[in-house]
Image 1 (tube, rainbow, N blue to C red):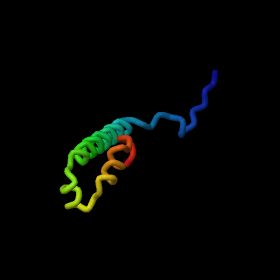
Image 2: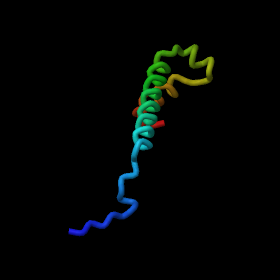
Image 3: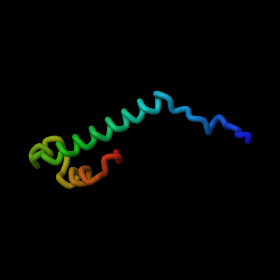
Length: 67
């Protein structure tokens, strides 16, 4: 049986793929951490930075993969 390999079908992931995955997971974890922290801020803290409680609720309800 003859199998033809198209260059775009070949595995080009290598170590770059894993580095990208590691970076993506790092970003997701950082988002989760930051959103948990924001949820703990008082209304006064939020007022000081010009953010409303509803802004925080909208942010903390996002899934971790959404920016």
